[in-house]
Image (tube, rainbow, N blue to C red):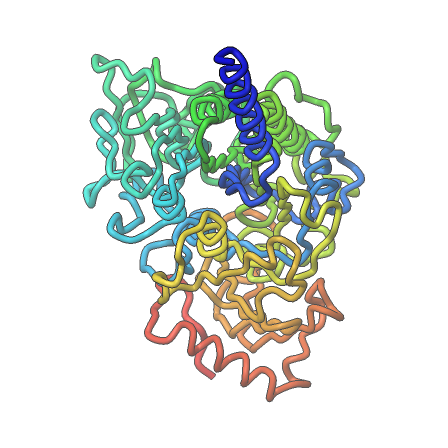
Length: 524
């Protein structure tokens, strides 16, 4: 009798245990883990530079696979036609021109962020995400006096919400040519301190202007200061020999650090902002890609960028994280061929159209300056293989990704960022109703629906320091119907004075009380 009682009790417990395990496994109401977010942010990649957006001369299969598995946005914009303001807007949710001094940053600029204000990184961090930035920064480091290259480089990314950072401090063509991990330069020998100066030469290292025989890449304009790895840069430096990067392995180093961050944080939700050096100048591809594109170094580093994307996707698969990771691929601004070095980008471009059917490029007020590829792959397959023509701005990542992470974004009211999560998932096919574009001279373009207004600006017709790119600056108002004329070839301002007046008023309202330091609008 006692044996039967024990046996019945054991069978009952076994049934209950199996039921509980089944419930755990099959309960559809069980809370889903927050998706990881990986943002791969390319540099100077144009709307027409990848095969997913119509390029035929060059193939980018890894990026194409993202488009096949996600949503390709064909009406997406960075907020600016240059890198610093685009990156600032992406991370703060504010147009960069609202804060004085947010033009193209120098290599020794103090941190551009107010550390008391929220960023995309700090918002995601508050939601339990581990946050990391790897790659090009170009948003300043250090306090008001600028960076202390031989000490602790702070404030920096760690003071605005990132848990980990591994940086190219400014750009590949600016000194110092070193990596910064968290608060310090990697491999810096205290006995060989770094000196940096952007106003005058320091030390005795050779320069491009004085020792051109040492160069393996000749500058076309500017970029004639200190030589590092046979390439003359913007700015002067000396010291830190053990810390200098190898240009040919920058992409591999950034991939290595990115995968390391993914592996270290795979057990909790993470946000990785991988800001590639490619395809910015100087374009020095790894030996794996040299000569492979038939378009010279610029084409080769597009292949290297595609390799980077493939490596990150492969790492996510290897860690069984791909099915719970949101992948965002985009660029900081439009394309440029000659941006300071003779690397045959213009001579070997052939039939390739870096900006697609758009006018202008990097620096420009035309759409070629800030209309960019944007591909979003959702882990649950939302919008798989579709194209969206909804109007999207990168400034909206702040509120949209914050909402995705479960943060109450209603506390962030006075911002340019909008909650466009439904647009990013493909549910909303309209998106924004308007946005502002910033050229290298400041905000001067206003897009509303399919209409685009470019305010009168008394400035140069071409970028004044070398690149053969139309600025979009004219002394009379410009108005374009982007639906009928996406290449902005026909200025119809005189035919629609009422529309010009309405858009001009909207733009003036948006920028009320702001001042610009480069070119001021001409007063008619």
